[in-house]
Image (cartoon, rainbow, N blue to C red; front, side):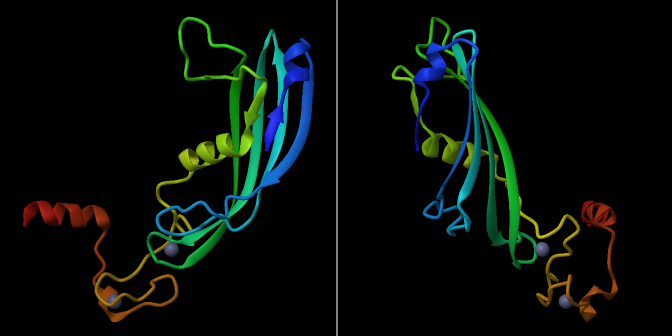
Amino acid sequence: MILDLKAIFLNDGSVLHTDYSFSMAEVKVDGIYPFVSPVKVDITAENRAGLVKLSLATSFNYQRPCDRCGTGVTKAMHYDFEHYLVTSLSGDQNDDYIETPDHTIDLDELLTADILLELPSKFLCSDNCKGLCPKCGANLNETTCNCTTKQIDPRLEVLKQLIE
Ligand SMILES: [Zn+2]
Ligand SMILES: [Zn+2]
C-alpha cells in the first residue's frame, strides 16, 4: 500500500491511526515460503515539528521447520517498527530518516525489509527443544533412543574435546 501522508506533513501536531494488511506469501526465506498469513499492520503517523514519526505494529503467522528437530512449527509473530520521515534530508545524511519528497511511502516494501531484518536467525519449536539424536536421528522431544544412555553435559563435552 502506498500511504499518503500529505495531510499529516502539512498539519503540525496531527495524528493518523489506521490499519491494513498485506501478503508476504511470495517472499522466500531459506528456500521456503514461511509467511502463511497476511501481515496485519497497525499504523500511527504523527507530525512532530515538521517530521513524521511512523509507528508500525505488525502481526503475522510464521511457519518453518525447527532448526533443531525439523518439526514444522507455526508461530504468531509481533514486531514493532518506527521510522522518521522527512520531506528532504538536510546536510548530515542519517539512516534513521527516510526521505519522502512527495509525502508518500510504499509500506509493503518498507515492512518487508523491516521484517526480514527482524526475523530470528535461529528458529526453534521451543527453547528447550531436545533436537534429533545425532546417531539414529530420533526426535528426542517425542521419544528416547538407546543411544542417549550415556548423556554428556554439553559443558563437559567441550572439556572432553579439549582433552582429546
Ligand atoms: Zn524442535
Ligand atoms: Zn539415537
